[in-house]
Image 1 (tube, rainbow, N blue to C red):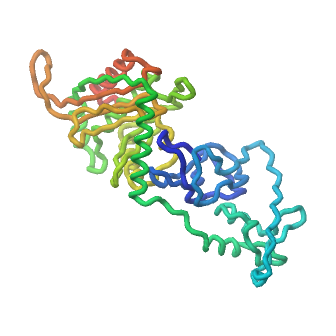
Image 2: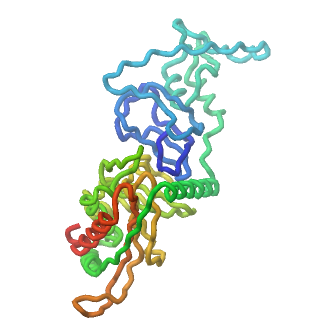
Image 3: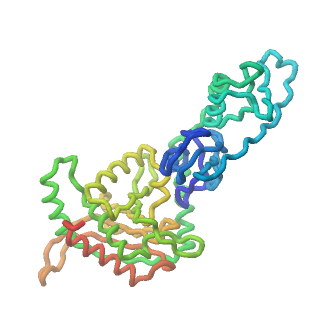
Length: 380
């Protein structure tokens, strides 16, 4: 069971999309797990062949519990495990089909199709009765067992929201208790960025226009190239740099609560690519169909409440990350330019960072880099 953030302790398996004998590749979606963040597509991080399904559909298990066994390339196949003999059947049940009879070698008699379907559904063959020759289990026997089994139930919206609030609160309490936060803030002049954005969007169809928030995300991602100590995780008593610059973006859910899935390799994406990925990410987050990597891979979080009229955001770091960037609204305010007071579109930017991984000097340099990049929006 993958960890989808420090606010997750367990998940319920809703669906298997693989069966023993299936070949899988890194990145394939192999299961669907229900969490407080929605029904999450679980990706596999190895390439190989599925040996065994370990957790049946409908079971809730803690983070870290093995869900299936995989044989990676070069590994020998596991020896078949003899099934336990079936329990004696009372005479009163003599009208039922005979129990599945072990074949020579101790394995239950079952067709390959029945074995594969049972494994994918998390059905223990030893608990079924076979209707085939000599009590062999058939695919129809397995399908009947699946039909009468209670379906795995996803959480109701109210239950999910209550659980999410509790989980977020626990994660934030841990963050404030364990992480030595420091906070920095600065004012960004957005005049050049907005002028470029207006000119650029005028040449585009409505569906292809960029939002100012995308420029902010790209500026943060590029600045992290020169401030790597803010991009990563604090694990096992030390800082572990991120494998890439994967910017978590805080998204408010329609029913309440929030998630912060990652925009992978945000520094390498163009503003157009980021805009398309962000739109898709918001849609899938609100539909409850995110991938496990999107919730587990973020190396920093960006949160913006400007659309809600908030001037300044003071964030709490999401462990095990070591930094969070907050943006408020863009509003016209007095600003001194070339010795004169003029009206300029200004934005309050903040940084919350972990003093174990960086210090105020490095944090200030990072914010200065973000500001500098926004003064040359055409280079983002």
